[in-house]
Length: 59
Image 1 (spheres, helix red, strand yellow):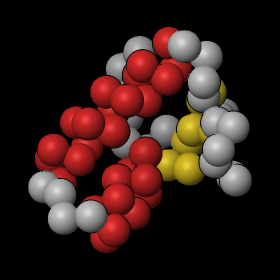
Image 2 (spheres, helix red, strand yellow):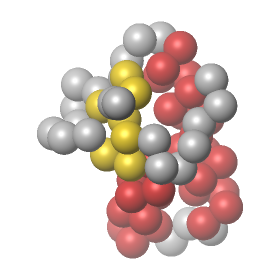
Image 3 (cartoon, one colour):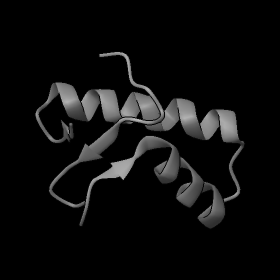
């Protein structure tokens, strides 16, 4: 599943649907992480979670 930064996602631990880019920005504010590394890691994790039915795309 090719992820786009503007696709809202939802999962059991997210209180409300969240845009991928917003999730990356939150992580970058909380941790010292390179933006490109953060995005690549988040997208890889989300893809794995999606494939295991742990989150869904919100239309």
